[in-house]
Length: 160
Length: 98
Length: 113
Image 1: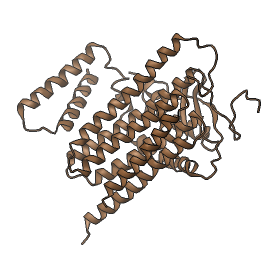
Image 2 (image 1 turned 45 degrees about the horizontal axis):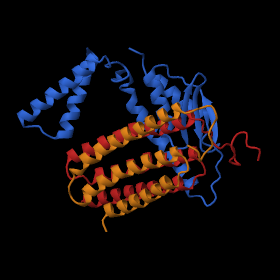
Image 3 (image 1 turned 90 degrees about the vertical axis):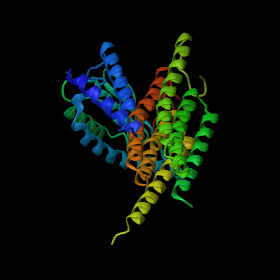
Image 4 (image 1 turned 180 degrees about the vertical axis):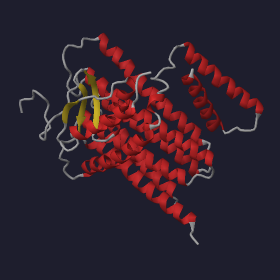
């Protein structure tokens, strides 16, 4: 039930901010009706769980995003240097990284973080961990990527 | 020259390069990647256009375009994965086929 | 007294220039890199650094806070959807048997060169 209320509040906030109507009762009524309808439909379909409303990630996710932003900035500079080099020295590499996060939300966050960081792309998720393709040897830093996984595993919480 | 015009020029140059990759291919996935990248730049372009013409309502369209672009990429990949699975999948393909 | 408009303009100029530079550099990489998997990385530069920096620059120039909120939504959607799309393309290519070039001499596995 708590998750359902959070979903209603989030959808309501989205509707209010996107429409920009705060003082027209008729339109506000329509908005409230559509928010409630969407939330009830989601509950009826049985998809209001930790995957669609990942409350377990909050509030740790904000610190993580801030940290991730700096990681992205650092590796962006590296990729841009290769893209503009007169003679790019690429040495692509394919390797497995162990996946520490246990919940599906944690795994998705970790794999997407790897993809979002330029220079590394997650290609497959298997038994051995996450299959990562890296642009050069420098980007194929298993230690740094594992550190990212540890961070996600710390903030993910439990599957509720 | 306003700063929006400079950014718009950069975006349009990058869009042209993405189109070059989309036409050159060589594989289907290169084209999908270039198309997706083109779509991301379109979102920014629509937003910049809103500022250039002094009509920030364009941002609603940009937001919608971002969602449609994402859904379209997934839909195209879905479509081709179905087509792929109906053919024989035994031999690994090299780049340029598909 | 500090001229806030001037500071805002200078900040936006800096963000637009670095963002536009990243977008163009990513597109150049998209054209230049040798195989499909390396091109994924170039496209990633455009999606993250380029797009988000330009959106941040537009936020600073926004005439009212509703515009800032909408730009924040666009930035958030791009931030959440672009890795999913990139991964979907990479995974689809991997599943049909695409093999990336490997090593400093850029050759395919099992290639006798």
